[in-house]
Image 1: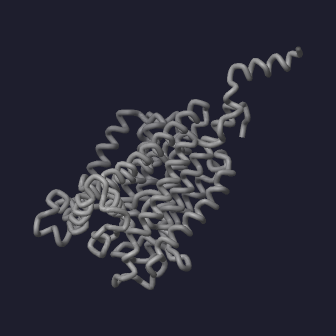
Image 2 (image 1 turned 90 degrees about the vertical axis):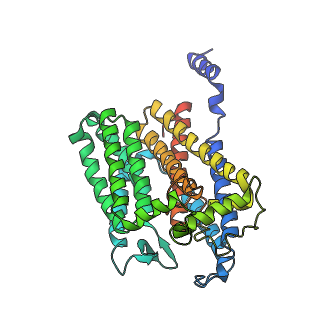
Image 3 (image 1 turned 180 degrees about the vertical axis):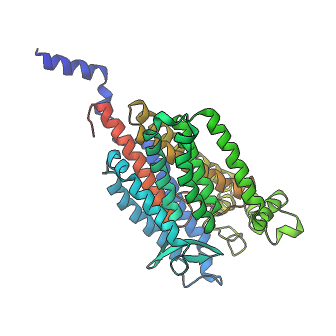
Length: 397
């Protein structure tokens, strides 16, 4: 037997399974597919009555579900292209993507360019659809912070050279988001960037001090804004007659919907709250409709699926970092932070655990911008996983 045959034989004897492993992470694909499919189903159920309301805007009974399905189809096509882009290419594009997202944040607050809805300038009309720049910024911040951690690895223990530069940049982003205003998106972006910095090895003393400062800052933003402060008071006592029909109207009807669903729900399509009682039932409060129609079981299914998605993102990231692919690893874990934090806030608001905040549920709520960016983020994580598996096989990509 030749030396080459002996060597290849020994390699195959050690790890025969590596040549037959899948090219993708099956639990992540299944969990995200179920969430997207559930989103289409629940958008159809939650929005079917909107065509009969005063704010229909020309939409028919099936308009929302058809648009959501179209966004999913477009997202799948884009994801197929994203999967072909190596992580090294994403790193080279990081600064460009971040600057582009920042320019869009500037444009959206300019009258005549941005669209004003419910006293907020968060959307840029593009033909028949509207794009929300804050969703792109969430993804851009993941790439930017992951790249920053690698470039500043030697200075992460220094406040001035390690944290201050990114703090200034994110401060500009925070200012633009508060001008819209979009405090919810800002909270998610801050959580993502701080989480990646922590995972990247920032000094623990600096991190804890900054976390305290940020908590104080968010508290001041809420306290100094009368309508945000009123939301907190309403959250603490949603059944108070002074709040139940005003500031706490959404929360009180959300709690009624979840309570009416009990363990197994009233049945798909049987929600009463979606019949013009619960505002934004197909977007921010879609979990309330899930709770009413599918009950505790439905809400637990959603929570379990997000737990799987977050766990797989962190595990894929851990594997990448262990194989010295730090950028891809931090990006994957950043996506896990994004989905984990945003789903926690959204579900927490619906269940009355957190003050009311306008954040959608990733991959489930109606909305093209959020859905497309969520699907792209999952595709990037699957690309990280694909490169991990190729490296295990001894193939460099």
